[in-house]
Length: 303
Length: 295
Figure: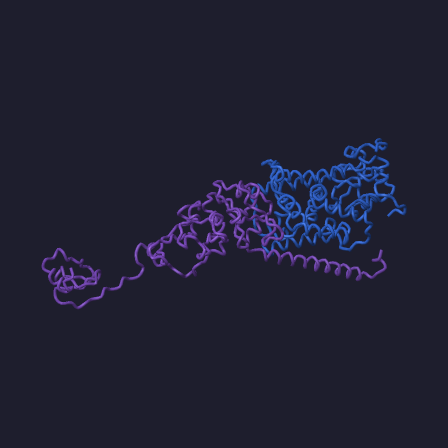
């Protein structure tokens, strides 16, 4: 960390204004809460836009969306879904091939709201120290869930999966699922920084595999402007993905190619030098990527 | 950096140790989840699956816990299991005593299912097998007590097919009839309307999952009357009729168990002779005499 103690993102707020320094965060929270609300206005107010939950949903009796991970487990347990679910899988896989697999984690998954809150509180309370579990553990978890699906002949992981438990619980009734969610929250708060989403969750691990080939990426069109303030590392839930692209390690192009980048865009927000911007994998990094950047730096004066 | 100073074997050992640690930790967790999932493969007796649900072991593999069936049920009688319920989390069920299946003709829950968990080949709701009604308590069933409650019989959507009322003598009064509700497993869909409607404090008729409600004969058992019908006749050689030594001109009639005059003198084939009493004036007096003149 920088020797000079400073509030993360303060420089960006000073340079760009509060709104521009929180643009992607606000958009992301709107997306997470908005998607949740789309599911909730049905049971709450009888306005049925979306039925189902994140495992399978049917929007306006037209658009099927299926979680490919749960279908994979079902297939391993030797059951074949109906055509509608297969269509849903195709749409979801194509979508995340486009926008980045782990965008699911940061823009859709409700557990992210919980674990982000745990992280925020962890910083606020000044809780230092964190248990060490390596980040690839999630792939072991993923493998384990697939193996037990095949061995038990049932979608066993769905019995305990906090992701679907939270989403389903909020829509259909939580029951004791709150205890599981509290456990995840407390684990992230006291035991391990970014513990669940960053190290253990097999759902995120699965989507990261789709994200390995995805199109939309965080690029670094101005990486030479980096002043090593370290703010991006401080806000990033997967900080290991930034270094190769930012420091051009082993000739890495100015694109974050790591599958576990969640495309949350916080690095874009907190960078006062506008090093980062959303772009596509194929195009050459450069000033042309400026289109997707948050508001122009000229707005720095506004609060 | 350390790898430069340490011998190469140390890094390998570290890698192996890390891998073993991870495999053991995650493996233990997997074992726990797997055993938990194994324990939840049998449905608790009070919970029933929606129409067309696959057998329980396959159901937990096919159901992706999306709740579409719950949403498309017009009677809102389906629930998704919560983690504390004794069945796989997120799978749909209903409790007949609270809200039974109303047996919609178009079966919207099955149509809504995106997987094969609810069998899409089920198009006739009367062919559904959600469970089987069982008259569990003969001591409290009002019909067994001699009343004409008949409610289960009346509310059954498959009237006179799934439940019939079988008359039996009321031995307590000696003069009345008991109308005993009898459930027929070939017709009962397990919708639970009977259980819901049963007026006693605790239902005397209950719907159970099939595995609990239905017995099964051993595979080698054959029902004689069924086999006879299939074969179009008796499958065993008929017994040779017993031959009696009777006085001349008389014969033993197997049907009535009496000795009667022999109508066909000389050629009386065993069992073939019909008892002709009225049409034979010669034999009548003898017959009367033998019977002690009780005609």
